[in-house]
Amino acid sequence: YDLRIAHIILGEFSSFKDVMTMIWNEEVIQKPPEVTMKEIQVQSLLDNRVDSLSDGKQESLLDSFHTFERLYKSLLSQYLDPAVDISLLVRKTTAVAENLKPITCTTFGTKAKAVIPEILAGIFTVFTVLKSGESYCRLEESPNEEEVD
Image (cartoon, rainbow, N blue to C red; front, side):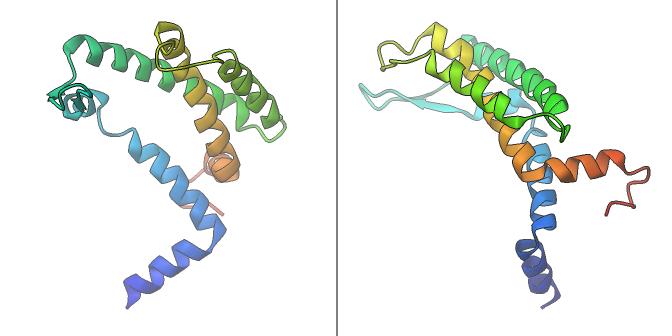
């Protein structure tokens, strides 16, 4: 019964939703990306064969992930400041995505793959700031972990 009440409280109060989003954002990246790469299975559209990612593709994806992570942390540190206009990041991210148009399966190549980490970092930053920005700021401003409002 107590667990059910705790779930209701966490689910219905917006400040808890912000904290839950922050926790989710942090926990998602706790699993080493190398482990995730080894677990990815690819399926051929031609013969339905299922394989693991090749070492080259794993390395390429890891490079993209590290680029994303670096950009995300940098953007987050810039845009968590309430005085900074988040719409500027929205416009920048949209412009990067717009530069890929038109895109098809045959044109989705190296150029497109190179900017995906930048687009995702922008999207994740906007989502994090809009959903949890105030909570991040409160945690950073709190001198003691136990004194979060």
